[in-house]
Amino acid sequence: MELIERVEAFLRNPDKTLAGDTQWISDSSQRGSAYQMHFQILAGGVLSSFELWCFADNEREFQPSFKLSLSLNHQPIIRVDHVHHRPHTNPPDKPTNYPSIIVNEVHWHPWEANKKLFRNRHTPPDRLRYADYLPNRAQRFDQLFRWFCGTVLQVQIGNLNVPDLPDRTKLL
Image (cartoon, rainbow, N blue to C red; front, side):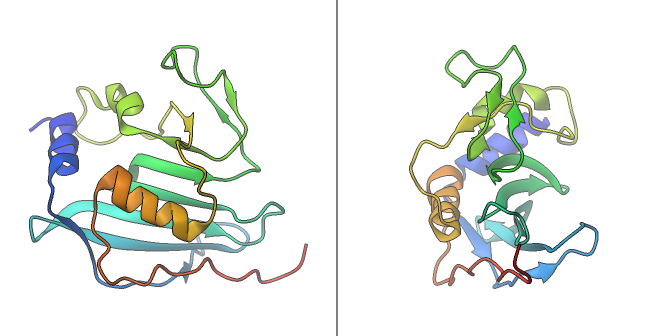
């Protein structure tokens, strides 16, 4: 099955659930106070190869600073970037209804816009190129987590208590 078909079959599956409970762990591969957590995703009651990754950096000047990502082989398929310190540059061939070249606010990388990057590939590309502003006004981690899981991915979170972002470790 081609990668695009595999992703779309996963996204169409109506029976997806986050598996287990997790917590933030320090990510020593990143500088500063980077944290990560990830959830396995069950599809049709079977463990899938897709995962939900969450990344947070609690030492950025502009808070909160985090990302949510549906990933395959640790590469993002769809991602929310709540990072004010790092604008995204859309290439000139962006979809016509997308923001001009620089996206300075909280944004996301939808599947439909980035799907063409997955054509004729067996693994996801290194980078998602096309970003758009969020279609809702959610700003907090718990709001975006629920929107990303429920609306975008259609993954049930069940009785999961959505973890808060890690506390800041120092004042700026």
